[in-house]
Image 1: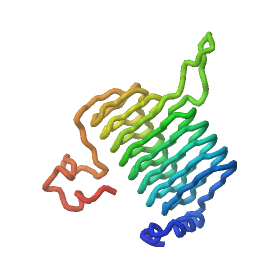
Image 2: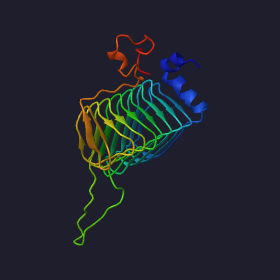
Image 3: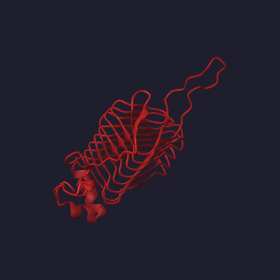
Image 4: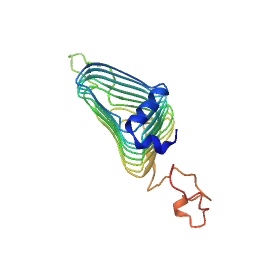
Length: 237
């Protein structure tokens, strides 16, 4: 079925998704699901509890994904024209939120929001395989006086951020716009905008960088190279 036809109708997109193995399971009360004209292939969605909210924006496409919302008032928002493959998304507990900005692409990663905190990705981000983003340790640790020493904290990723292979962004991570997080990096603090950061813990190694989804031509970004072939300067896919 042509993609423009799918985009033209929410009902047609829903039928296409069902025919291609996507299944929704909901238990509880007061849930709200908005799918618009998104297309899901072999994706499982499980919503348990009460008053959970799932929004999948127009033109979004999901392949082989697992989506779970458990608790009261849990919310997952996937923006327009996102591309998700083999991704696990989990929102658990009272009032937790997971937000993925429009035109973001994620492959083979895990994103978990828990304990009423927020996990947010901006627009036009890329997240590579085996990356993990979590705003909670999932289990509590206490000191000898009974006070918890590992409370959850928000994770906020800016716009146009590239998160590399196997990188881990844990509670308290904040990434500025345009940054690149290297492979296997561990981020628990703040990374400034437009910098390359890697290591464990991740630290900025280069500043004032730019990155593109397109491959470079003669060592330059396609949009900066006036001699690059027109095909190389094409729109970002």
